[in-house]
Length: 221
Image 1: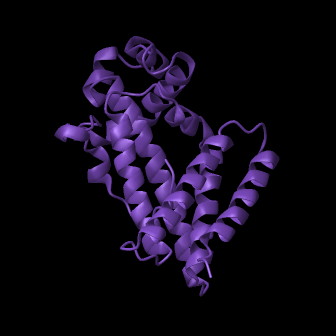
Image 2 (image 1 turned 90 degrees about the vertical axis):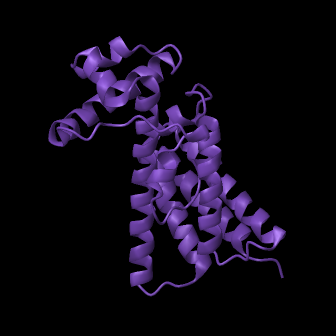
């Protein structure tokens, strides 16, 4: 769940290990589905956080969303589809935040790789605070089968994109390790933000982490 993202890889995100596809909204009646989607996902998030993924029931999610259970299954194919849709929503929102921030910074003439990386990290962490309920869900071990492998796959892609942003030579092991450490720091901080008591504490953490990233991003020598 960590990293600075500049571009979407939605097809890869929807592909589960072993070739199984994510169950999302069906294509028909797209206007109706767009209106149903946020209601269903909000209901699913509430129930997953209260019960845990394993103990969450589709009937309770459907009841909270105010739709028939069969309609929920038709839209998402079950709990796994709902969970993966929540993950995709979080990831895509974080992508939009970081990409917009990097675009603004570059428009202001910023071209230093470290400055851009830290600006993107700050946007990502602010997004983790704003979407902390989703972040808390995704940080839990209670998840659908195959999700850990999918998340690791996405994390590796994040590390590669961070390496490009920092202009690190990925052929050098030391460079790859440095970027991996930086990405891990951001992910750990994002999880901590989910447990913050208020925005003041959250922003203190963001400032602290960005200072650490500046230090760790500077190449040795």
